[in-house]
Image 1 (cartoon, rainbow, N blue to C red):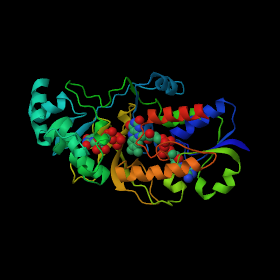
Image 2: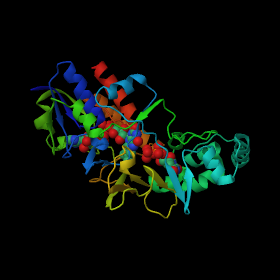
Image 3: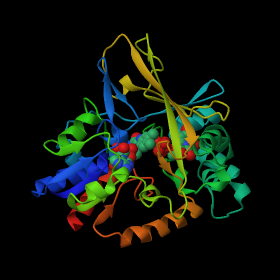
Image 4: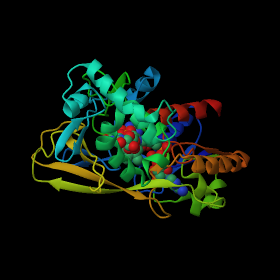
Length: 363
Ligand code: FAD
Ligand code: UDP
């Protein structure tokens, strides 16, 4: 008998498992993949820590969360400064004075503001209601056309006019020469990889790998008083109200016989015709001296059953359907739903950790 069964060994499940064990609860983690960590999982490739499910950069403004993750593993001082490639020209991200200089040759913030202001006129003061309008309102038409439209439409498989504004508001817009992709106070990558962080959280906890809880739920649910479920919420209810939409990804991993392929951890490809959105070169996240390098190209894809769900599509239609699933979830006795898939939320890692800590406190 266990006090808790935790479905999923991603960050949400692992934080809950760790905190509950600290409170002397008996916990079993069930994971359908063959490894722990969910999407933050990293694996070693001859000294290079490879982010198996795409680039993961930890960032937060919350000192408690930063201290919390640092209590398990030491973090390096990595700062994400991605580049965007468009028509063979490189631009700095996020949108800042370096980007505006590269685009328009302007050297002063006032000049950049003037250009953006004039390009924003086409909105006629209208409150932005979709991603396209939000982007034009923030950075003007040129930045939208060159750095946002193509990337966004391939990433989400939908027109920018059909996407919610909040997706683009994740990125800072600055009138300083600062290429830091995040404005948070704390940022870094666990030295030795995220797998070390999750292993430390799950130390001493029973885990079953390669088991899909939903296939054996009667058998397992009987083993514990409560279940914490971190998989997709619609899958839990056998899609009885219909499918929520997600975006999936295909990762193409290449081991190359060169010590430095692109000179930066992340390069975005913002042209619509190039099928991948970004190329990451893993060794630049946690620098090591090796003769070889490993890169991953990220190809977005529409999700269907059988594929991994990576991004919830939080538009109006899906959010309403999620609310109906949420109601079913609230009627489910002794099951707590949490994490990016169960809460159908575009959560970053620090937000998932906070949500898991709050869940355990409530319990
Ligand atoms: P997950 O990591 O998805 O874990 C869920 C786990 O549950 C998985 O291991 C899954 O196999 C398991 N599971 C599901 N269903 C079942 C079942 N039926 N039975 C058994 N096991 C099951 N955040 C950042 O802060 N910074 C970044 O740079 C960043 N980059 C990202 C890049 C990409 C490409 C993606 C997709 C996400 C990124 N994120 C980033 C977000 C981050 O990955 C998530 O916030 C976090 O990993 C979510 O943790 P989770 O536990 O909710 O979900
Ligand atoms: N985005 C863009 N161009 C870029 C980078 C991002 O248009 O070069 C947009 C795109 O819509 C993306 C969103 O900004 O989905 C958020 O970007 P972020 O890098 O936060 O995405 P994630 O790392 O979560 O995939």
